[in-house]
Image 1 (cartoon, helix red, strand yellow):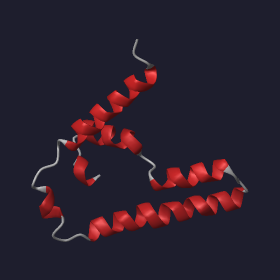
Image 2 (cartoon, rainbow, N blue to C red; image 1 turned 120 degrees about the vertical axis):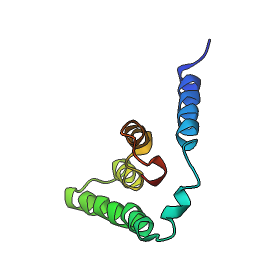
Image 3 (cartoon, rainbow, N blue to C red; image 1 turned 135 degrees about the vertical axis):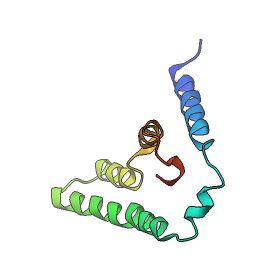
Image 4 (tube, one colour; image 1 turned 90 degrees about the vertical axis):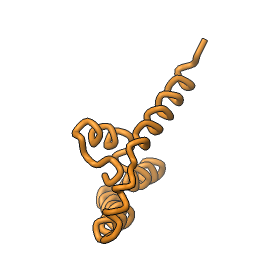
Length: 95
C-alpha cells in the first residue's frame, strides 16, 4: 500500500516539474535590463525578512516559532503562488 507521504512527495515533484516546463527563450529579453530582477531579489531576501524580524521583536515571539517565521519570510508563496500565476495566465518564470 502506498503511504500518504510518498504520494504527496510524488505529487509535489510532478507539480514542480510541469510548472518549470513553461520556460522559453523569450525570458532572456527581460534580462537585458535587470532592474526588476534586482528589485525582486532585494525585496525577497532583505526587506521581507527584515520586516519579519521587526514583527518578531515587536511581538516578543521567540524560539522555534520565531525561526519558522524567519524561514517563511524568505519564501512566502511556495507552490501556491506558482499555481495562481499559472491559472491567471501570468508569466510564471518572472513571478
